[in-house]
Image 1: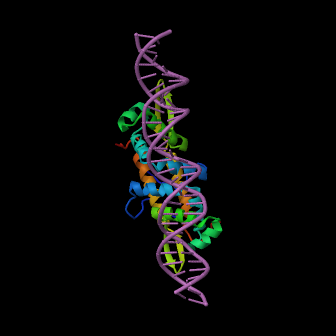
Image 2: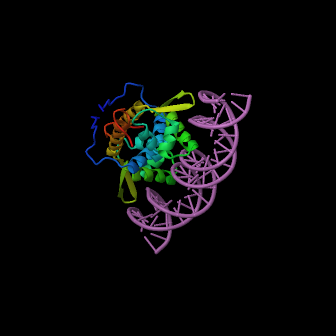
Image 3: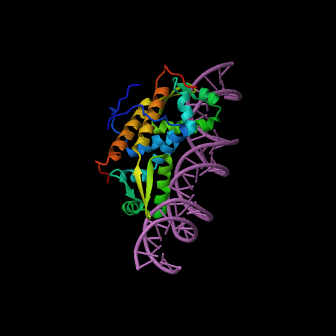
Length: 110
Length: 110
DNA sequence: ACCATAGATCAACTAGAGTTGATTCAAGAC
DNA sequence: GTCTTGAATCAACTCTAGTTGATCTATGGT
């Protein structure tokens, strides 16, 4: 994917970055993200595919959604989740800023 | 800073990425990183500057060091820590891969 | 109406991470 | 040698996050 470098959306606040970092720092949640890589899927499908207890999956989906990595829609009894790649891009932008602020002796951090 | 996109070093393993993500997901540790942005500093300086208990700072420095974000050197009784910006770049590379794997319907994640 | 299903949420529990004050070890001064 | 200082480490404790099985609410079928 072409590297956007600076993201067009407003820069991440620290708290949002923290939520993203924490959400991604859990192997199981990475599995969820990978399972959604091919496109939107319903919870029932993910539960089966990942072999997770329903409440466990719901918990993790909530963390990812609250962090902004997923969005959902309801269709009858079914809830479908899909990825928001822009959240990953936003985090990369945040990391770029962190690196720029703190990676060069010329800059001063207070 | 110029965006390297793909990093020259071997790609991050998941466990290393996890360590980096977790290390950065703590506000206090971000403060440490910012304090080191202007260059190498000794622990005694950081303790005073950040107003932290010595053992508390040591704990957090260890997490950052173990994750690869800091390196240290000893000079007499003094331990100096400095940032390793390449760790941040590596994490950005890892995120770029995550986005590439999982951000496009064309790719398949198993 | 009743029954089944999907999935979020809950409360209790477990596991992991952060904090604290004490201790230990190494370096340095005398 | 003794004493001081810097900083890592320790054990006990506190706090946060993850897990579990049950419950609740909404949707759908008959």
